[in-house]
Image (cartoon, rainbow, N blue to C red; front, side):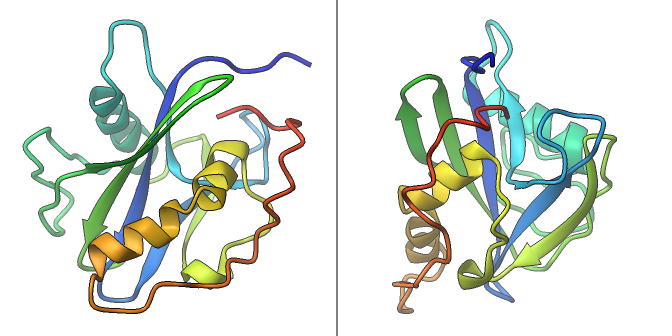
Amino acid sequence: MAINKQPGAWALIFCSQTGTFLLGKRSPAVKKPGVWNLFGGRIDERESPMAALLRELHEETGFGISAAGAVDYGGPSAIPVPLGFVDGLRQLHYYLLIVDREAVPSLNAEHTEYAWFAPAAMPPDLNRPTRIAINIGLIQKALHIAQPNTDSDLDMDVDPTDMDGDDLGS
């Protein structure tokens, strides 16, 4: 099995009104079909992580976010902020995007559906970059940033030992 070593960038898209995170379910047309993931993906050669994130968000969701933070899908203005970085088999860049309502993405062929999940109700079938983000505490970190006056110490229903490497794709 080939291991994906290409760097990637993903957004934890958080709705401040409902306290939920947006995930997409991967289609049969892509690697690792049927699993849920954060929106984002590979960083192309000579592309910055932020540029890759903005490109991937536009491709996968139709959300048009500029580097200045203007959201053109009729929703809130937001600026993706760096949230975390992992440098192992591949570089993983994570950003937080806070929105004020549960926007409806315009999915491309990479995803068959989307859903907004509460932090303690994430689906069990996650791709590796999404599982890593959860396991290293980025959901809790996002909640601390987005809702600084609330208790965000949650019991996440993800097995931190489930890091078998069988799904290193994006």
